[in-house]
Structures are given as structure tokens and as C-alpha cells.
Length: 96
Image (tube, rainbow, N blue to C red; front, top):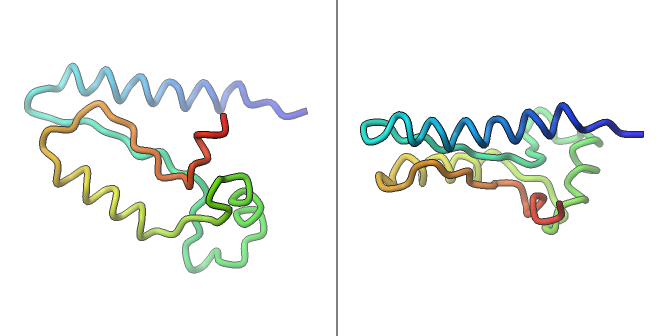
């Protein structure tokens, strides 16, 4: 039996913190978040767990650092975006 209560609570708390911090620190500071899915960096390429986790995403493959960096660049370049969580997870969040 899997117990995801603490994990789920932590994720929801971080999302709420992102939203509330964006309101509290505006207009001088923007607050956004990036929600990652399975990401394989070069030293971890053979990691079977990450490969298995990636099979549970609609894209059926793990991410790499480059899309995460691209997402970060986008967030840094857009000065009218705040309080958002950008999912960079291969669609994993779509599956519940």
C-alpha cells in the first residue's frame, strides 16, 4: 500500500505558497514555480527507476535538463507572469 499523504500535502503546500507569495511580494517581486516530472541527467542515464517513472507520462520518456532550463528562461524573460506553476513533467500531471 502506497502512502502519498505527506508527499501530496507538501506539493499542495508549495503551490499555495507560490500563489500567496506572488500576491504578498507584488509588484516588486514575481514568484513562480516549476513542477518537474522524471528528469534524467547524464550521470543518471541508466537509472531504471527514472525510466520506469517516465513510462507513466503521456510522452513515455523521461525529461532532460534542457527543457527545464528553457522553462526557467521563459519565466525569467516574462515580466508579466506571477503566481504560476509551470508543469515540465511530460504530461504526468494530466493523469492525476
